[in-house]
Length: 316
Ligand SMILES: [Zn+2]
Image (tube, rainbow, N blue to C red):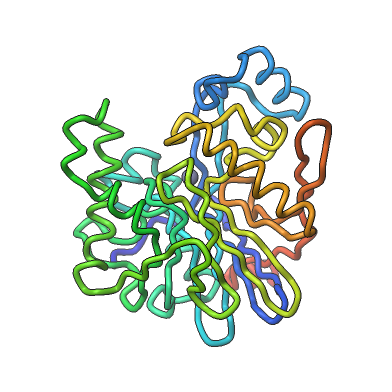
């Protein structure tokens, strides 16, 4: 693949143990989403701005991180979602040049995309699957199979839905999912995932339809440690933990999405599981605790690891 321009500053990656598994989180960049009242449309604008202000967060530009998790089980490398990708007509063109950084940051962490065995997809929205192929449609994970729910695959790769999509960006949702998933499907490299599917020893799918027709969160269990990696179950570390019912502008079915949030928050909190949250501040690892009528985010302490070239620079 063609090389990608460097980012403005070295991007650290995080590596931490989870039972006997080794986990790495790399950043795909940050999505600048604009005003909170647009992204969380059912909230009272005054309430949402007040809650953000209390938490020292801007009201006019919601920033969503893109935390890509890679789990080394010892036998296999499993990556979760792929970021927005490097296609100038799709992800990077829409989300800006600071995004689409998953592959270079993966390499900086010492992981070759050719060594990834499975890319497990939470759902097939742009910021989760548009990084599977390059602009020419060539798979960026040449040896990986793609684990995805049939519901999401069939809905979002259905090009007949383009005509009725309300705007160009929504039309691209279908075009982009088709472009990124079909090369893997055509070569027989799709693993169909449903509730309870074990995609690798210790890694199990939990069906959470709502944000997308076939949204999946994954339970990662090793030696008594359990983590939920939850894609777009929850987009924001304050707003949708405190108020799951405020929903997100791209929720496919907001009532169902809200019910899934409450269900998984309770599962996580009552069992003291850890969470790897795709869109929370990097690297998105933490726990939940009950707080008022909702939940609060407790980021985990982790040791940051810098890319080797940065460590070499610091040594001089
Ligand atoms: Zn997302």
